[in-house]
Length: 270
Ligand code: 2HA
Ligand code: ZN
Image (cartoon, rainbow, N blue to C red):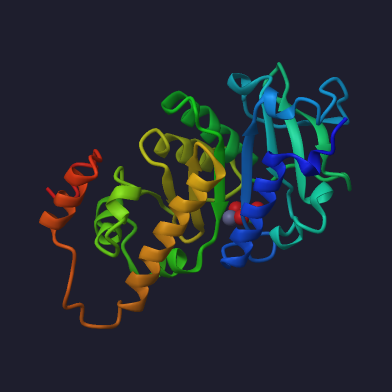
C-alpha cells in the first residue's frame, strides 16, 4: 500500500490548509475543510475494507453514501496539519444508512470530524445537485470579512454591490454575488440547512459575525473565492474612514461582465 501522505490530494489539502492558516484566517481551532476524494484517487493508498471505527451523526446524508471525504478534525489547530496530519485530518466514507461515517484513516488520537460536519455534508449534497463536479466545502474566519461584518449592514444585495466595487476582478470571480446569513448558532443542523439553501445560488456565504463558507470544484477554487472576497473586504475597511473619491461605476461593472461573459446576479446594479 502506498503512503497516503504522499498522495497528491493529501499534499494539496495540507498545503491549502497551511495557506489558510498563514493568511490569518484560522486562529486556534478556527475553520474546517472537507474534500470529496474519488475512488480512483484513493486506489492503492487505502484498504477500503478496513474500517477503523464508525462515527454516528444526527442528520441524513444518504445522498452521499459510499462517498469519501478528507475532513479536518474537531478542536484541532490548522497550524498543526503539517506536523501532525494523522490527528488533525481523517478520511471517512459515508455509510449506506447515511447516519454514520466510517473512518478509514486519521483521527488517530480518538478524534472526530469537525463540529461543522452537518454544514459541510449538507452543503456537499446541495452543491453536487447544482454542480456535479463540486468537491470542496471550506470555512474560515478571515479578519477583514469579519471587520466588515461589524460596520456593514448584513444584506446580500448591498454587500455584493460594495464588494464588486472594491476590485475590478470581483464581479468576474463571484458574479453570482455573496449569500449572507444572520448570526446563528454554529455547529447545528439548522445553520447547515440555512447554509446549504444559500449554496443553491451562491459559492460564497457569509455567516454573520462568524466567518465565511465557500465551495468549489477543487481546493484552489474555494480558496481563491475567499481570497478575492477577503481582499475586497480589506480594501473596503482600509477606505472606510476616508472620503472615497473614486469608484468602479455600474457601467464599468456591466462592461466587465459583458467582456468576460459572466452571468452576474440581477438586481444589484440594475
Ligand atoms: O471548527 O470554526 O465554526 C471551529 C469553527 C466553528
Ligand atoms: Zn467557524
